[in-house]
Amino acid sequence: MKIQIKPAQMSQSCCKNKNAAPCSSKTPEKREEGPDRRMSAVDRRAGLERRHQTRAESGYTGPERRVSERREDTGLERRRGPGRRLSDDRRSAEEGEMTAEQFEFVMAIETYKKVNKRMYPTWTEILEVVQQLGYRKTNARTVDLPNVPEPALSKVG
Image 1 (cartoon, rainbow, N blue to C red):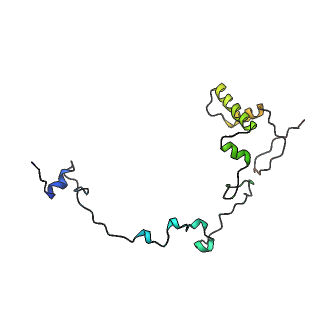
Image 2 (cartoon, helix red, strand yellow):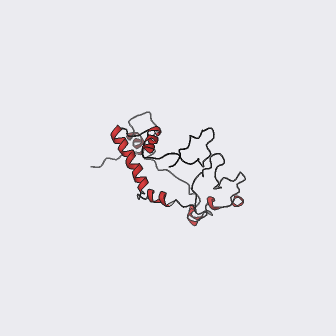
Image 3 (tube, one colour):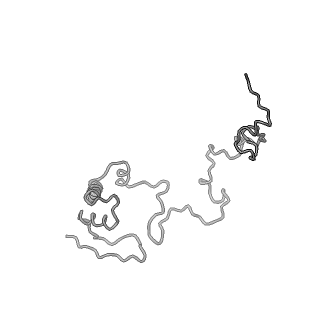
């Protein structure tokens, strides 16, 4: 035996609240057909990207921000950018291959964390570990750090 529900009963039967508006899930929606986006002049798969356009092509009138220069205040590069290669030490470390110095440093930090039961050592504690490994400041820094006094240099030998 089939039970037939009339359209007026259908909108009330799916909601528990009798004062609620009829459910839209039972009433069909009519959508208007928009323009076909596949026929657009800008196809993102075609390689037309704003990032590869010149200032004149893109219509940008503001200051140039895509320069890969060193910052005047610190002397550091903002980012590596395209076409820049990592140093061999940095690349091998990122791939999981470490030099003897890198491995010694990592193992010293891990040992410090185990002995002192510290999951995250502070920068002061890391500096102590580095000094215990025998590292000393022997050269003046090449990075400009304003308002940061440079500590005394250690003599070599």
